[in-house]
Image 1 (cartoon, rainbow, N blue to C red):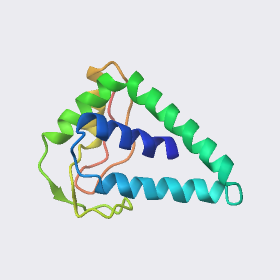
Image 2 (cartoon, one colour):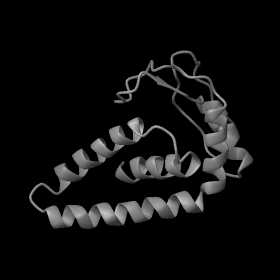
Image 3 (cartoon, helix red, strand yellow):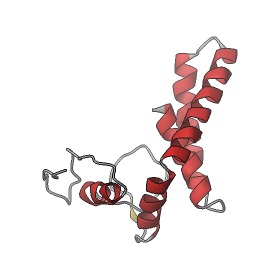
Image 4 (cartoon, rainbow, N blue to C red):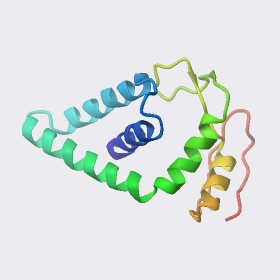
Length: 129
C-alpha cells in the first residue's frame, strides 16, 4: 500500500507540478501511519524503508509513465464532483474514471486487466480482455 501511495504522489507531481498538494498531504500522512505501525521502535529502519519504497515507486512511475499519462489526461478532462465514496480522503471533490473506462484506457496501452468491483452508479459487469 505504501508504494501505491508514493506512486500517486510522484505521478501527480510529474503530471502537474503546480497542483494543490492537499491530497498528497493526506497520502503522506497515511504513509507515515503505515511505516510507524511497522517500525514502531526503529526510526532508522523506518527511514531506510521509506527511502527504498520511494525509489521503487519512482521506478514504477517511470516504467509505466506512458499509461499513467493517458489516465491522468482522462482524469483532468473530467469535471470536479463531490466525493461520494469514503476512501479516507479529506477532500470534498475529486475527479474519477469508472472501472470499465480505466480498463479501456489501459488496454490502449497494451495493459490488460479487468475490474471486478463496481460503484453505486455503475452496475456490475464483466469486462472482456
